[in-house]
Structure formats: structure tokens, C-alpha cells
Length: 586
Image 1 (cartoon, rainbow, N blue to C red):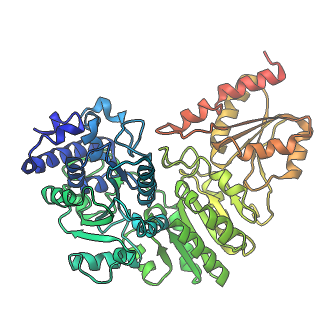
Image 2 (image 1 turned 135 degrees about the horizontal axis):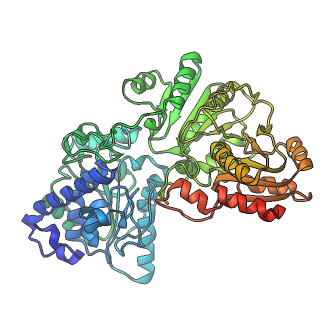
């Protein structure tokens, strides 16, 4: 056993080179043990075990600085840098995050969870090294489809005129989250097939030195390659070919399914808690659109599964140009959507809220300034969405609700989403974004709202004195809170669903202000700059007291949504206290 003796990075260098394959085997076993119990990014980590071992055998981290792109493939790196107990001891599983984290270790340079950033970050470190007179190596690892992101090109472009030590390792596993897309990846295929000798070489075209190594899961061979690159005096791209999911047959065969996932049985890959039931509401709405409108096109940026487009269905619609996966390039997808809409087509772009922040300029400038009627599906927004500080959707309201021309709709129930989607894809007046709930609930009522009448809110429940305005996904929770409050305080509370987050229903708010002296707003996103403060601003000159509740401004991570909401005042106990204090109720 070698891994049990790796307590510090220096311990790796005590191992003989010919013994490194056994160390890699033990690292992979530790990875599989934890992933099978906790879930996480499976394929990307299993594919870079040998690279991680070789990097730390050759270089002198943290003096030599290693930057992991996306960093969802950093688990072997963490095992080798003093954190192996978090992968072998269930009591310590939560001691590490799923991404590089400087708070955990000096070997982690940045907290990174989005793609295409490592080359630019490494260039920044290199320029910093230069002005301080340092001599260390700067290494950027990029892969898992991240080369398609615009920042990666920008970094490569500058690296081509940077004349000092910079090592860029392209981990080519022939895969993004789903399959790779774009002409770049055809060129990478040609380089692989010619052992790096293809004359049409993007990297050389950008004035970068280039080296190809086919056997990216051969740790001894990798050590030899990296030793030659160490202390190089100019930028070098090392293009290595690895196997995503290496070591688990089912993960190697179905790389998209095993990019990440829940806890599983090692023997057969079956989820330990059974197969989660997939809600087809979004998928059904998109398929219905494609089948009934032959000028419609659905787009995504590297995450087709988020829309339910998998297997044969995806292939069929891609083949006829009606479904587009641009790869990890959200900016490109947003601008393409605007172009489709400008030509008269019906574009629907769906992506996770944390990734849409990457395309704010294209949203604002390319789409909304031009007022082109594309539809944006904002997936996993708010507290009920993703829960890592690298993948937060807590600022989607701030991002979308303040852009001119954009209409941001927030459904509370499945029926509302279906009608909103139908309205969005048929109207030609505005770009429209829909805040898609992470979990759909049926209202059980027919939805007849005319969404073309902008900024008209819906009164869910009539009361007096106290009104609660709850943003979409919090309507069901607000009803639960109200039931408990009314039972304890013997009052009737009004509940309003604003529907539109890009404006307020002035007529309804004026009417509400006539017989309600307290208005409480609830939202599952960040409080600062959120919808509640829009309501508070409206009531500012009046006598109506407004109290806003939302999530505190912080990079929250690894949280339980209901607990986080309660901590920030969205609970029956807090609302009861607020009402008692406002109306001096004993």
C-alpha cells in the first residue's frame, strides 16, 4: 500500500517511478469508494488519476502552481495533497468540496466551478511571477469540453505572444458533459489520429509550442513527458488523450451518463436509492413546440440532459438542425438565439441559472437591446437549484429582472409554466425568460391567465391587514406558512403571486395598500436588488410598512434550501413574530 503513506506532497517523491502505477490504482480505488457513497463527478475524475499522480511526482506544488479548469476533476489532486481521509473515511466525506478550494489547501489556487478559465488564470499567475522575479512553473489543465468556451480562446491567443514559462495541458477525453461540438474538436480528432502530426494545428497557428501524447492514462509515460516540459522557457501545449470514466466499464461506455451522478453500486452502477423520477414538463413543452412549429429551434450549451434531450431524440432533432448544442459556450448560444429570432425563427435557449451569468453581455446587448423575441429557460434558479458556491443561482432575479425589454416570468405551478411557455414562444413583442421551478407542483386548477397583459399579478388568497407577496416557487411554501400563521393568530392573510419579476402591478399594489398596513415579500434568491426591494420602493412614499425576506448576500454552499430560507426569515415562526410586533398582538 502506497496511498496510506501519502500524508504530504513530499511523500509522493519518495516512491520509485516504477511504483507509480500502483499508487494510481489506489487513488482510483479511493475515488470510486467515495463517489459510490456520495455521488459527484465520476468520469472526469477517474480519467485524470494518472495525470494527477504524474503532476505531483514531477512538479513542486505549491511552489509550482497548478490551475485546474472547471476543477470538477480535482479529486485525485485532493487525495494526493493531504486530503485522502476525505475519500476513505465516511466521517470526513464532507471535509472537502467538489472543486478546488484555497480554504482547504495551499495546493488549491482558486475556487473554480465554471469552464474555460484556467489558461487566463494561469497567465495571470505567470505575469505575477514575472514582476516578482519568480522562477516556478505555471501549469494550466483544461479539458472536458472546456476548450469551446470563449475565454479559453482568449487565453490561448494571449499565450501565443507570451514568451515565458507556461505549460498548458489539454486533457482530451473526447467528451464534454455530453458529446463535444464544434470544428475545434474535429481538429483535435485529426491531431489524435496523426499522433499530433496533422499540419492543420490550431495551437501552432497561435504561435504555441505543441506536443501530443497518446497514452494519457500511462503514469510513467506522463512523468517522462512532464519532466521534459518542466522549467521550459516558453508556452507549451501538451495534448494528452485520456479515457473519461477510466476504471469503471459502465462509466467508460456511457460517458455522458457518468459525467456526474448520485451514489451507486460499484458492481453494476445502479443508483443506490433507485432511479430518480425525471420530470418531463420542460421536455414535453419543447418537443411539442418542435413538432407543431417547423420554424422553431431549441438550443443548449453543453447540457442537453437538462432539457431532457438524450439518445435518439436528440440525434433526430440535431440531424435536421432543430436542436443545437453549441458546447460549453453560453455566450454563443444566446447570440445565436437572437439571430434566429431576428430572422423570424422561434428560438428557445435553455441553460442552468449559474451558467447563464456567463452570457450577461449577450443577453443584454445582443438579445434585449435588439428586442428580439427569443425565449430563455432559466433552469435551477434560486435556493432550490444548485447548491455549491461555484454553481449558485441565487442572483437570477437581479440578473434578468433589470434588463430593459426583457420579460421575466416566474411560475409557481406546472400549469402556469405550460401556459407561460405557450405565450412566450407565440408572441413576437419581447424576449422572454421563464424562471423554471426545480420541482413542479400541480395547482389542480385550469390556468387561463393572459400573459400578454404585462405586469399583472395574481391574488392567490384574499385577506386583509397583512399581505404576503411570494415569488413563484415560494407560493406553495407561503401557503404553508400562512396556514400556520392564521391558525395561531386568527387572522386572514392575503397572498399575491407577482408572476412578472420585471415590473410591479401598480393597480393591485395600490388597492392592496388601501386595506393592508403590512406587506411581506418572500423570494428564494438574494435579497439585495431582488424583487422584494422593487415592491418596497413602490410603497416608499406611502404609510404601508414593507418587510423583505430573501437570501443573504454570500457565496452559500452545501446548504439545505428550506433551512437556508428559514435562517433568512422565511418561516412561519418568523412571520408570526413580525405580525405580532407590528400589530402588538400578544
